Image 1 (cartoon, one colour):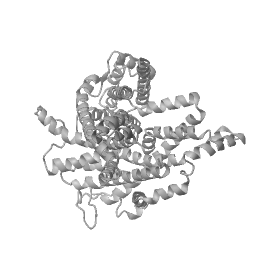
Image 2 (tube, chains in turn brown, green):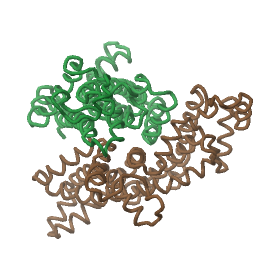
Image 3 (cartoon, chains in turn blue, yellow):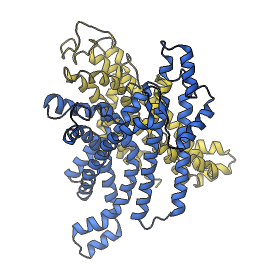
Image 4 (tube, rainbow over the protein chains, first blue to last red):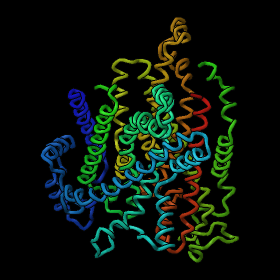
Length: 313
Length: 279
């Protein structure tokens, strides 16, 4: 067990190195440098001084090593474009992203798992067919369009919910934030629910076919007891893996949803930073998101082995 | 096992339900629309008419006009061209990358397999959206870069499936006989082992088109995919976003087109999968 965790940890570090080195190389391969240095109103000497101050005149590998050195001390660098430390920008955006993705994940699991179980138990009935086709629609739905349609429906036509943002200007109450959260969380949650339903359904179909379920039935146990205690607990194992797989998708989907709903999270920050070639911020977000995804995958693997005693690492 | 794989039975199973027929007809219509866009479109997709902006549907403009007075129907037809092209091209690229790597890993085994499998696993845990965002915003989003970037974000599943297939097939009798006949390893792999994985590859390709079209439209919506004035369903939606209060209908059509196209390819892939792999 300890060996497994250590191995996974080392792998995660290697992965992080590869991702950051690649991103770093890519960013520095782009011509021009940060767009602020291309500002024609800036004197060439000033631009040169800025370049020196931020170490942009050094060879790329050296810049990367320096960046890594600062990262190991928790310093994510300074955004030239915004004039603020990257850690501060990310710190401001991260809670919004966690709130949105967390709520969406909760919606997806809280509704997706029961619906998937029912569909599996009622296999080949009209209910199952309805659920299967609806989840198929969900898989093919462009998140940003779905979000726009909900905005038009609930904000433009019915005027019951705000169209975007996280707070009404001037209002800081959590009720207001909640009202702003409804549409984006519903958008992201239902789209990901499709995947959860399909996965739960097939995992349950696999589980109810097992011998121990037949034995339980032969012993005359109550059907609800069989479903929950015998079949579902085994179906849970693949579902945990799914949650691990869902997180990168969720973070990416959250970024698109954030853009549609002007939600002030990491995704919007990333889109803005990318468009002004803000190196430090792009690198910081890449590290943040990669760490988030890697940690979630590791946790999923550990939960997996806790749930299934047959799995030993 | 071999019987279940026979093409005739698979094709019978494929055509049995209505889903496959609906998906194939829909894709045929969409493909025709994209191919014949220059003949079907009533207007030049980029012809502006500033006296006639945001017009509701009319006899001259069946789906109305956008904020620059461009004909929405014409833009939808040309946008479909772009989406299909990007979808097909990046699917092809990701299938090539995935099959080659998967086949190498499965056939050669040893350190080649470890290296490729580790790389595949690593790529699977990269948050792809941020990867695409970084690549496209820095390299600029020309069509070839867009196609390659989308392909690079989606070859991993193909590689895994092909590797598994090659592993399962490489010790079968006909492979041994190919080796016994003195064929080189490369030739045995390319001519005898890889073709066995064709059904798997076709299914992955179909689902890959759906993924690529969905991704392209999301990137175009964010302004880092297909860039204006070239119409794409995604960037049409981005434009329409500013006018949801005055003409919400503008957001309807491009979204419907993305949705039904992706749905059709997903449905085709799904029915193909159950036809070729009846388990």
